[in-house]
Length: 271
Image (cartoon, rainbow, N blue to C red):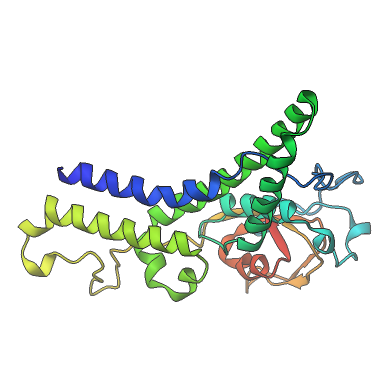
């Protein structure tokens, strides 16, 4: 087997870790629970506040209903596992870095789907088709969530396994995949060209004298849209600007690094 086949075969083997997680999703939901809410129910009309001049580059949008701004509890208290995973999926797709793995929600949904799979066999065909369609939606959500994280791991695998903070965000399967990916990538590079170079030029994680690193990192300065889930109050976007009051349901566009901690605390969500 040549180098390219070895690399492809190794990646296919590691990808099985994800397929094993997702393959159990042949149906979804417990017997009569787990309703999906579209958009959180009825809401009042949206208003756009502020101007859009050059001075407001990091808070170009500020929307929402101020009457709801004092509701700090948001919808966190009523979140079920499906809502948690849906929010994690959107956040994962919108953020430049890999986020915390929602292992508890994934495990609970898998158990519910397994139960529903057994129940579907005893249902009339019409009801069974409805349940299967609902299950397919969850299967899509789960697979997309896992593959989004997989894509990020492949893009910055070496950085994620070196940084303790990021390693703790990965599931055990993801960590094993990242390590296997780095090993296969390094083996392929060495067999292809690195072994032909002088020893001092064979490193894959060197840092130049001016601080330039070979290992790629997520761009934490990328622009993102975020919605405020619970009122934050005055928040300093930029040191040179006046604080902005962040109320529930307001929407902002800013650099990811600015709202990174708010996202981790669950006070905002990406959109």
